[in-house]
Amino acid sequence: MNAVVSEERKPGPILRALREGVEVILELFFPAHCINCEDALFPGEVAICDSCAKQIVLIKDDVCIRCGMKLSYGFGPKITCADCIRDSGFEMTCAVAMYSGPWQTLVQRWKFGRCQGSTRQLASMIVHRIKALGLEDEFDVITHVPMIGFSWFFRGFDHTQTLAKHIAFEMLKPHERLLAKVRKTKKQSSLNKANRLKNLKGAFRAAGEVKGKRVLLIDDIVTTCATAKECSNTLLKAGARQVVVAALARAALDKN
Ligand SMILES: [Zn+2]
Ligand SMILES: [Zn+2]
Image (tube, rainbow, N blue to C red):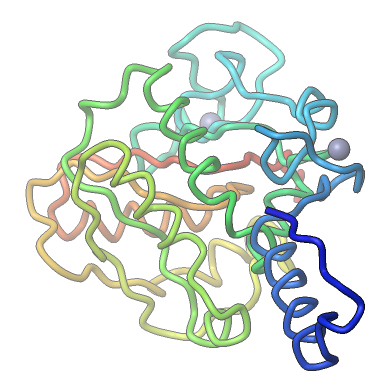
């Protein structure tokens, strides 16, 4: 409620600075402007305006069922790409949208601590995709790709763990920490496909009770599937019955 403030009751510099500080923090967590085009958001719009949301390329059935790679042939609900026919560690990948345009901006900013207030909505979009594929009863437990120590330190929060916990809450399934990183690795985005696989080889170990479980593994962005594959193989070797991977975004695969 806006009360009329008389001239002599105007807030002092400390109170003003405090209010401005609160506004900056609110804008960080719950942006009042679209994080893509910076237009003011209308009630009901979260982090991104409706017009930018329409530009998001949602993933439907035109992808490989295992790695989530967009296919240019044979659309259908159970098609596998040539790479995955030969090799795959996991059962299925479901990603919400292609990592491009406004979706890329939103996922990037969220990942680096901006608009954390949208985590619940992002989690809901993954849940929606899981349900659309009829996978809601295909797992017993939800876990996430662990973050390396320094990333957590610089970002201040483990974004994938937070996302996984929201998904678990919405799906009424347990969230457990089933993976731990055992050694330092190079930044995946700086490497080509072959080196990404090498970089992560043996980088994880299973933690907690994995045997016989069907696991939903949450990641943020799937690119070459190197992380998903290594994490899935670690879980499967530890006795997991099945691993399904779910992510916010699928980046177009490079040819390296
Ligand atoms: Zn916008
Ligand atoms: Zn594939």
